[in-house]
Length: 115
Image 1 (cartoon, rainbow, N blue to C red):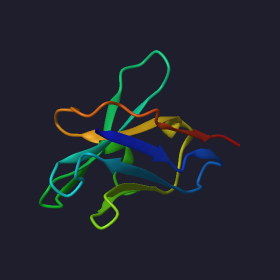
Image 2: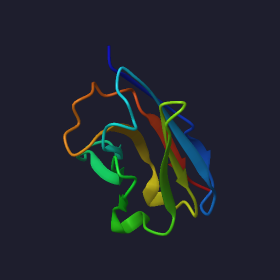
Image 3: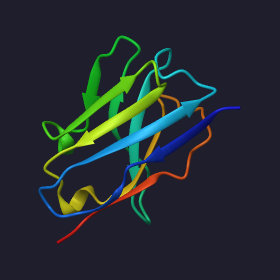
Image 4: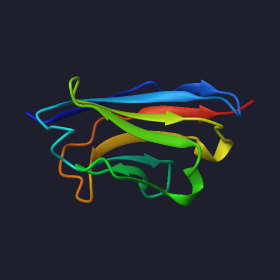
C-alpha cells in the first residue's frame, strides 16, 4: 500500500525557516522522480520543487534560492528546506511522484507565514 505522510509545517514569521518531511511507504523516493507541491484554497495545486532519480533538482521561479529539496534513501523520506519564507509561501504542502502524481495524496502539512 502506497502512503505519503507529510509533516513539519507550522506558523512562522516572514524570513523564517521550516523543514518539511515526507515519509514514504510502498513507493521508493530513490527509484522515482519525486516532487513537492502546494495548494491554497480555491487554487490549483502548484508544483514547487522536483528531484529526479539522478538527483537533478528543479524549482519554480518563486522559490529558487530559498528552498532546497532533498531525500534520504535510507529513511525513504523526502525533505523540503524552506528559508527566507514569505507570506505568499502560505499553503498546504504535499509530496508525490512527478511528473505523474500516481500515489494517493496525503493530507499535506500546512505552512503559514505571518507576522
